Image (tube, rainbow, N blue to C red; front, top):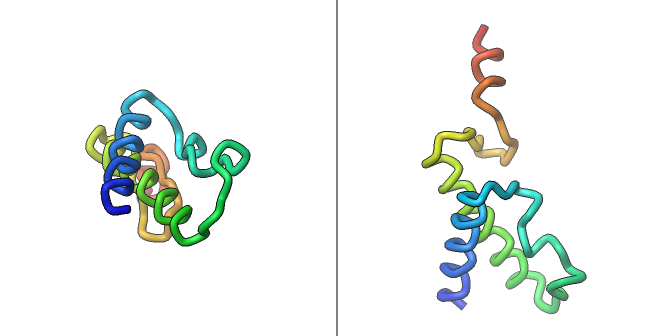
Length: 81
């Protein structure tokens, strides 16, 4: 399973590099990927999101606070004012 998690992280990185959003997480579409083991599903969901967030941070698009909310750079500047 560890290899599967790494593959899912890499897929998240690639998807973000291609311009996909957090809503495009392939694990969020249970009709395409039926959920049989909730813990395994969540691990894969979270691995993709983590890979997506790494690429997003490296590209300088957004900041991801610890609570999971998405804060765009423009919003950050507005909150400081």
